[in-house]
Image (cartoon, rainbow, N blue to C red; front, side, top):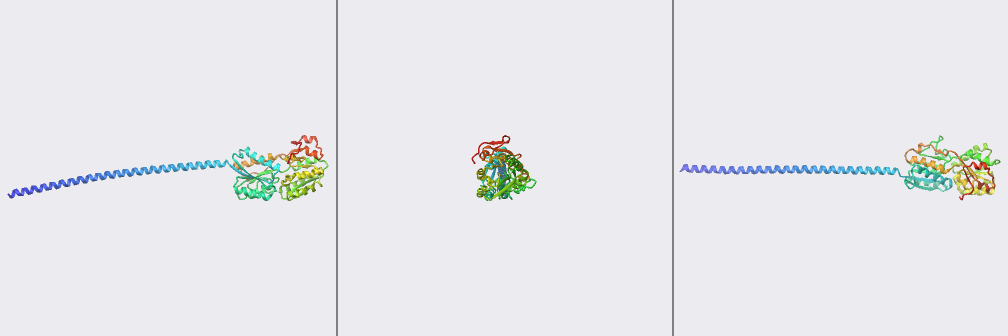
Length: 391
């Protein structure tokens, strides 16, 4: 009986152990499954993270590429804008007075620019101002041009050229002048013709000896030549000095009369015509502006007035060994084009002069004072006018 009981207890114990062991195996399997599942999840998470990182990197690369493209495009636009801006010019033209020769000079200046591909209304903007023969106004005009940042200033006639140079000092604005009789005397050029600064241009230096020779041939018995001039115009004073230097060679005496303003011209002209055999008119801007007053008083005295350029002959001067101001302006405009295009610096260009003067004659003006002109003299003129143009 005891043996049976002992056997039963042993059997029960073995069964319990078996059951317990089976329970441990299931738990281990479950743990293993959970481990596999965890590893799989971790792997999926890693793959997901890698994918996200790759996507972010791709996005960043795209952004960088787009940014570079945008920058390149902006640079290209800037370059194109710069290139375009280089082909667009803004200039200021300051003309000292309103009369034919200076108007012709301005016309020629724009033509000279156009000859070089710089055309008003296409790639050129022009700001034009006339000082009406007032030096204070000339200074205000050039000051305004510099303040506006123009690419270049053109000063037509000595006072405007001097004002432009003074206004542009200390800036990068170049100045080109025209119709400056004596750039050296005006302190715009050195004795050797080179510029004193960022300024150059053309001179309308008069053909003094050629003019004296012409007057002598036309008036064999004349002794005194009258000249009116403005005391504030440097170009006139230096030209009169040349006339006085050479007058004796041709048997003449120069009688000059200075004025301060246009208002003084009437009285000065009325007085001078009674003291001389003829009047020789310069390119003095104030006197030229009142040339009809001089011509009127000279006509009363039956004495000729000789001009210094073609426009003065057209409006009533008998003759001139003078300049063609349109040609002078063209020469100036072509110089300015080189500066605007960057081909030359104004500071490195000596001033230029027009090559040779030409003879201009007005037969109607001679007829009105009872003066007879030799046919051979008239036939040798570059231009002959048989009427007096309205001024």
